[in-house]
Image (cartoon, rainbow, N blue to C red):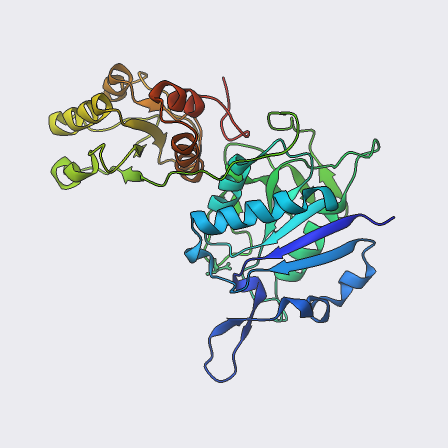
Amino acid sequence: MNPKVLIIYTGGTIGMVNDPITGTLTAFNFDHLYQQIPELNRLNVELNTISFEHPVDSSEMNLTYWKLIATMVFDNYAKYDGFVILHGSDTMAYTATALSFMLQGLEKPVILTGSQLPINEIRTDGRENVLTSIEIAAAKKGNGEARVQEVVIYFENNLYRGNRTTKISANAFEAFASPNFPPVANAGIHITYQDIQNTKKINGLQLYTDLDNRVALLKIFPGFNANVYKSLFDFENIKGIVLETFGAGNAPTDKLFDDLIADYIKQGGVVLNITQCLSGSVEQGLYETSSFFQKIGVIGGGDMTTEAAICKLMFALGSSTDKCEIENILKQSIAGELSVV
Ligand code: ASP
C-alpha cells in the first residue's frame, strides 16, 4: 500500500499565479496541483489536499491560523503517514516553531515548504520543494517508523528543524538557515538523513492551542532611549518580554532601563534574554553588562532564535499563570528549540 500524505495549502507565493489583468499575484485553485506538477503522478504516494478557504500571504498569519493548521494535522493524524504544509516563506519559521509547541509527541513528519517563485513560473523553486517534501513526508525507516518525526522546514535542498530556522533572504532561493542546529537532512542525488535525536518523546500526540500573545519584543541598539519604551513594562497589558541583546546577552548600563526591568519582574512579568546575533548563545553573567540581568531574574534564552523565543513565550504563558511554571517551561527544551548544556 502506498504511503498517504496530506497537503495543506495555506497560501504564499507557491500557490499564486500572475493575474494578467492586474499584474498582481493571486491564489490558484489547489485542486489543479497535478496540472502544475505532473510529476506528482509518478510518486508512489497517495495524496490528498486541503486548502484554506481563503489562502493568505504569510504576513497575515496569526494565532487563529496556527490553531487551524495544528487542528487540521491533529484531526487527520491517524489517517496519514505525513503532512506537507504549503506556506509563504516570510513567516514560515514562526509557524513551524509555533506548531512544534502546539503538536507535541509527533511520530510523523510535518513539513512546511513554499517557494520564492510561483509554481507556474519556469524557474520556480516550488516544484522541487513540493516534490521532495512529499518524498520526505512518505519516507520510512527499515522498521516502518517515519524517518522524520517532528515539525521541519524543507527549502532549497535542506530539511531543517522548524524551531531552529530563520528566514535569511528575501530573494535568494536559499532563503532559510538554521545557525545553531545542523540540517536534519540534505537532498542531493539521494536524500541523506542525519542521525538526529528526536525531540522529547511523550506518549501520543498532544494538541496545545492555548497561546497567549500578550508578549513584546524589544531589540536594543547603541544609543537606545529606555524612556521611549517605558509603557512596555506594564504587567497589566504585557505578560512577557523578549529582549534581543548584544553578543552573549549584553545591554548598555542604563539605570532607567535596569529599574524598568527589575520592577516589571517584581510585578510578575517574565523577561527572556536572547542574542541578536545570527548564531551563538546568551550566557548571562559572562560580562559585567549582563550580570545585572542574572541578578534580577531575567531568563537566559540560550541559543534560541527570535522566532523560538516569541512562540515559546506565547506557549508558556498560555500553559500556565504560575510564574515558576512559566519560567520552568522557558528554561527547558520543549521541542528541541534550545540546546541544553
Ligand atoms: N509574501 C509571501 C508570503 O510569505 C512570500 C512567499 O511566499 O515566499 O506569503
